[in-house]
Image (tube, rainbow, N blue to C red; front, side, top):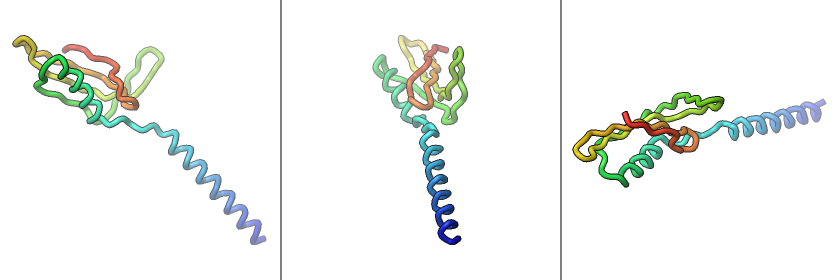
Length: 104
């Protein structure tokens, strides 16, 4: 009886560790919001100096047609030709790819 109990405990432990590994691997890791902001600022700096920037560190859901993902929302402010320009952007929280940029 003791060998049977030992075998059941061993099999349960292996199954639990396999399940925990699968759950861990399936959780999608977020792209750092600071890195997204650095990349967007770098792109805008190619067109000239920027005055300010911001990004929400918390993600929010974004749906376009049948696709839904989590996004970071941020913004850039700059002066161009003596005119204040403000932009808002959305970036995919899992890849860091910019989905949308619009002038406000």
